[in-house]
Length: 310
Image 1: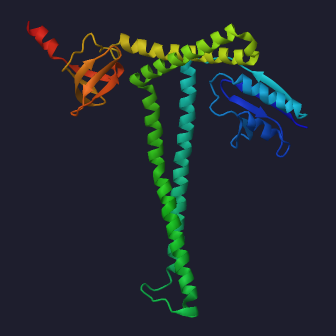
Image 2: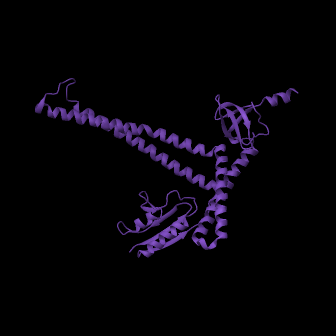
Image 3: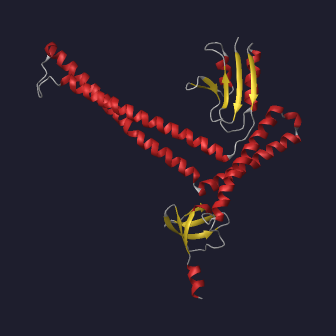
């Protein structure tokens, strides 16, 4: 029988160490959301770094392991790391992946060049334009040409994959920069606040009907709430600094009027209606597009000109 150590830390997420292939522990862990991570040779729960531990799944897996005759220990660290530390670790991880993609691209470039040379070497001794003899006499010639063509095709596919690496790296950088944009941060704060309110309602139901809840579920909810509170506070601090510096939150229904021009996503659009949380802009058709105020980059307001003239 196997001994399994299930641990959760903010840096590493949820991991299960121990067990061997064929002893049945893997099947049990997979039933509770664990997946095999070949890079570290362990089972774990995906996307569990710097997330609240899934206490219910962890303890259910441990209990089933014990029922099956194995031994299992559970260690859960509920520490919540601050946003700055989390972002720094995520950036380092992304940079490691980009370095790996760069190395992979260089390796594929070399493989493609080697395949092209091999394809050329196969037929370099055959005079250009020499016809292939029919029947058995030309079999060797045909086979050599086919191998050369197959190798050249493989070289082209390898080179195509190598050429994709810079775009993948650039896409990764753009995605990371997109997450740090102030308008994206503002929408994330709204979404996290909605999740927090939903979680508070679920926790209230646990208090109202304690007989229907478990200690594991209650601890899981408490962990989720602590993570949400920290993430909201960290993102809100970024927005507050930007507002204090005048880089965000300058526009609202108080200073934007109908027919003003606003710059959104690099384009100037006419305002159709200014709402409490959003601005509706014309499209040139019978409908309007709606954006959050956080997406307004600049404003051209005729009212300000009128006020200046008066």
